[in-house]
Length: 411
Image 1: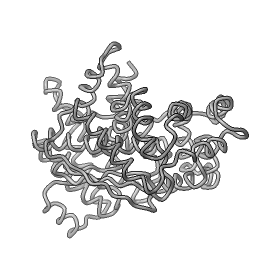
Image 2: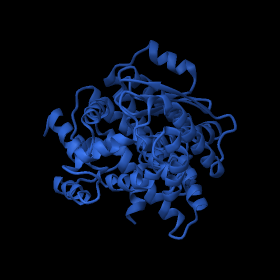
Image 3: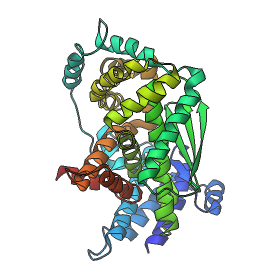
Image 4: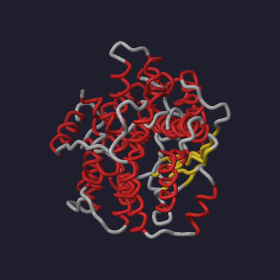
C-alpha cells in the first residue's frame, strides 16, 4: 500500500512543480512521470483534492508492531503530503503567518526572540569587535579585509571541497561513483546551491555577485557538498530509493519537512567535518595563504566569527516581521544590517531570499540546532567523533522527521 501511495505522491509533487518552479528541487525517478506532469497539467484544486485523498488512504499511523523504519516511512510520507497541501493552498492565494507557515511546511515551531535580545548581543560585541564606532559598521569594515580575491576563488573553493570530501569519506561510506561539478553564477538570491541530478551526481553553484569571505569557502564546500546536501541526497538515493525501492525519495519538494533535515544537517555538517580548532588550523595553514590573506590573523578572525554567530537568529526575526507585514523591505534590510551585521548589499540580497522562499529561512539555524542536539544526545555525553559521525550518517539515510528531532531534543 505504501508504495502505491508513494508513487502517487511523487506524481503529485511533479504536478505541483508545473505551477511553482521552485517546488521540485530534485527529481531522478522515471522520466515518463516527468513527461506526464509536463504534458498533462493538473489544476491546483485537483492536486489538493488528490493529496487529501492520499492522506485519508494512509490514515494516522501503522500498527505499533510494524518495523520502526516502516513506521518512520509512513509518518514521513504523511507529513510530506500535509506540507504539499499547505503549499498548494498558498499557491491558490492562502496566506499564513510566518509561524503557522513554518509549522505547516517544515514540521517545527520556530523560536521567537525579542529585539532587546539582539540589541544586548550586539552591545556585548562592543568591546570585542576591532575598530571604533557602531558595531555593525565596524564588523562590515573588519570583514572586508577577508574577502577571497576573484582570481583565487576557484582554487580556494576546490581545496575546501576536496578537504571536506576527504574528511567525510573517512567516516561515511559514500557511493563509489558519486561525483559533482562546480559552477560560478551571478544574480541569485542565495550564496550557494546544490542541484542534485540523481545517479549520485550534483551540480554545485556558487553565487559570485557579492564578495565571498574566507569563512564561506568551508561553509559552502561542506554545506553544499561534503557532508552536506550532496552526501544527504546520495545516501537517500542509495539506501532508500535503490536499496529499499521507496519511490517517494526520488523527488525532493523544497517546501517540505525534508528541507529542515537537509539544511540543518548541511549546516551541522560543517562542524562535523571541521570541528573547532581543526578548522582554524586548516584555514590558517592552507586557505588563508591560498587566498593571499594574512594567516596570522586567522585565529582572531574566527574568534570574531564565533561571537557574531550568536546573532544567527536575527535573520529569522527580520523575515517574521517582513512576511507578517509588520515592516517593509527597507526596514527589514535595516534590521539585518543592525542585528545580523550584514553589509547593505547582503541585506538587500537577503530580502530577495525572503521574497522567494519566505519562512524557509528557519531551516538553516533551527534545523542546525535540532540536528546537533539529536546527534549529540543519541551519541551520548562522552561520545567520540566516530560515534557522532555514525549517528549523523544514519540520520542522513533515514526518513526521520523534524518533529522527531524536536521531541528528542526536548527530553
